[in-house]
Image (cartoon, rainbow, N blue to C red; front, side):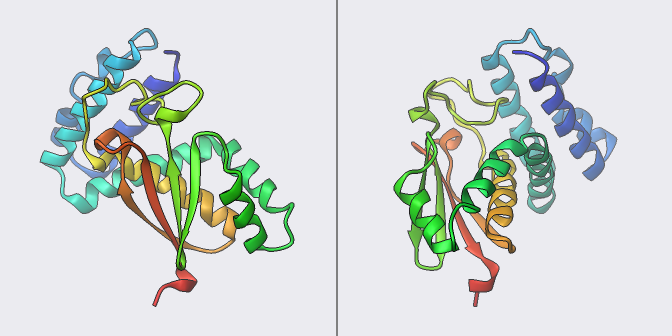
Length: 199
């Protein structure tokens, strides 16, 4: 599994600790000390499922969403290559419309881009990737088939999507989670609305 998973769990613990008290932090992170670089991906994913359930039961929605969004912003910083490459593709086109048309016609592997009025729909299809998985997040990619977890966790991906598209479009966007592969859907769908288009 490598060092990535323990580092991700440490980041989650730091965000939970910053947003809650020591008691809540201890409860949410129960068992995290047993997750090491040698832990199986399945075991790590099941721990994350349990931690998210504990977060849901102990922390108000606004706070737990903020916790996961901060994790997602950190993930975007650590995995900035995807964002850099997408911004570079945008730079090859004279205008935004031409870029979006190209992305819709030929999206990166395991993704799809749709247009719905003023919104874009970023679709992730982890089951259709070169190596099928439950999620592109390393921590929960090995969640067993038949298991599902709270969409609270997906606010991490929502923040990643927001960071990516704000960089590509050069302006603020609003992102909503429509569907999530780890919570039972066949794919993940994020609705992206540039704020300049909001009423």
